[in-house]
Image 1 (cartoon, chains in turn yellow, red):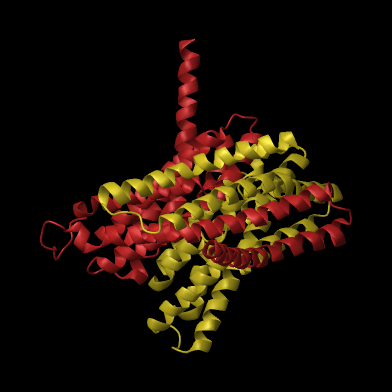
Image 2: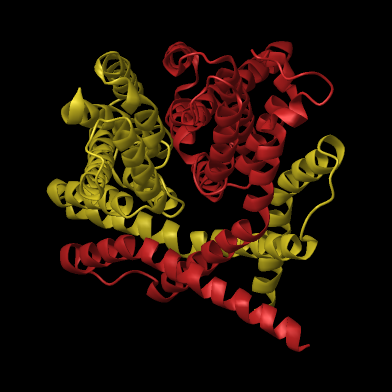
Length: 246
Length: 266
């Protein structure tokens, strides 16, 4: 108990250090550049305290729960030897965590708004909701597919850079053909797909798989799943844009 | 006393609301894990009590973290982004130019870089990946150095992205140039770091960075004449996920050159 308390205290100090740059930046710009006092000092102090506590708990729980479960599941799947179940799991994990992602819902809504104003879809609530949902499912499907391809890569030991560079080439080619209004949304949709809980879980899954399969190096083969998850949505959202109104 | 109690109640209520939202967020992941663990793997979860507590801590931590950001950092950061991009601040001493010179926005670029760097250091998913990378590499990759390289990448990316909005250049020239740099670096970079470098592009843009950066982009695009927030406001995130890849590979290359030189002098 005593030891755990010291561990907790140490990570609390670590979180304070992580937060220090933000505090310095805000203080410098507020006082030296904008030359204004801070509003609601009490609120800011409470907020910072919550952020430090939250970060500490998150990292604590990460090493207790998220990392171990990701790795143990990867090892069980590797032992079971059923590649189909593993790929199904990979797809569900990618699709399931993305389709309900709040930042994706927000971006899809915004994009539908832009599309309606630009005259690409009808200016009605139904058409906008349909468009936003279509976008969300497109992104979720492409993240599911990305994790599947990434897991296949780990199993087969394909070098990552051919796949990623191939993906880049696809993005560049699609950019030339996709309608202009979808490009900004497509590029950004790659960034919003990977949430704070998905990332540790997917990382642990990749590293766990690479350490369980003979001949794979967890460093060279274990990472890279997130890279796929941020690349495929760009391609598929541009395809979606072309289908909707090229 | 009574007053502080009222404040605390409001805070608690807000916390419970955030907790509920986080729970809804985690629910799909949790159900997928449980379904596959119980129906496909058909084994009890190892160390189920510890894992359960871990999930509980992650939930509580994330909810506290988000609530704190909403309370303190986001309003402040967004307000500052608006003030810094306000023409009245930028042209304090001179008449407002009809055609803005990109040099007038120097403070905006510095702010963009500083906020990009500092929010990336506090990004929880990057911390997770960095911890894992240090563990897997047996300490060859230092978690803090990795985080600092990624943060430098985000800083450069967001500053460059802001410059692009001010200058009004089309986004895809920048992104395609970035891709070409990544491809060239991949050929010369130590193999071990490549997947991690690619990953670091995706992890930078989550909870902390996105809201602040989006506010900066929208502020810039809506105050500069001739820019549309719809077309130019988006796109900063794309810069923030491309530049860290370059930065992490550059870090690995520098370390390699360094150790090479040391071995030569020996």
